[in-house]
Length: 207
Image 1 (cartoon, one colour):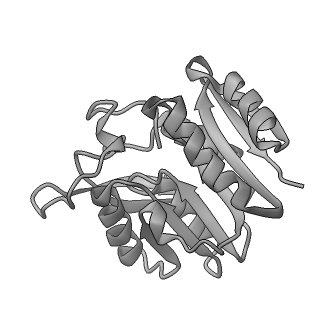
Image 2 (tube, rainbow, N blue to C red):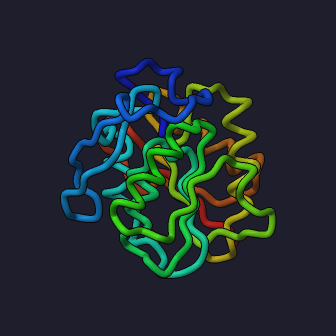
Image 3 (cartoon, rainbow, N blue to C red):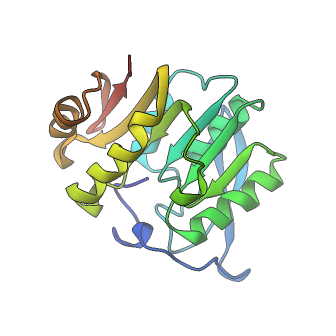
């Protein structure tokens, strides 16, 4: 996840050690239509709430596929991955981030919620042969175009035929130019399916 953070814009993007018990806290948020207690900590993106971009994404995406491999790219403490897992208990949900602290928080919350279908891992932990039934992401725009483009080059082509990827991007941080880049450089069809509160939601649909 990536757009605004009470811990500073850069904190989310760099590896942090798992938080100590004293550093961790729980907050209550609504996931998949119900209040849930989740683990957060300083040093991850938006530790006090579900950020606005992710809220827009979750209101826009269709229900997660009931089976297959689902990806939350840049998972943070996990609102997107946890929503996928709650909606689709028979699917395998990959919660991917470079931040070890974020991954630890996702694992703890998944365990508390009884979600056995969440795999929280760094990017290298996803086997190369995994093909995705869905990708949902609030990508880390502020890491810069080169890093962002490499992330998308890596993961969007792994969508299976007929699958959909949904990305939420702030309009003033280049949503429209990113849409054009995906079409021109990855050759993937992209539609803008929502625009709300300064964010665009882009749908990528490989043929």
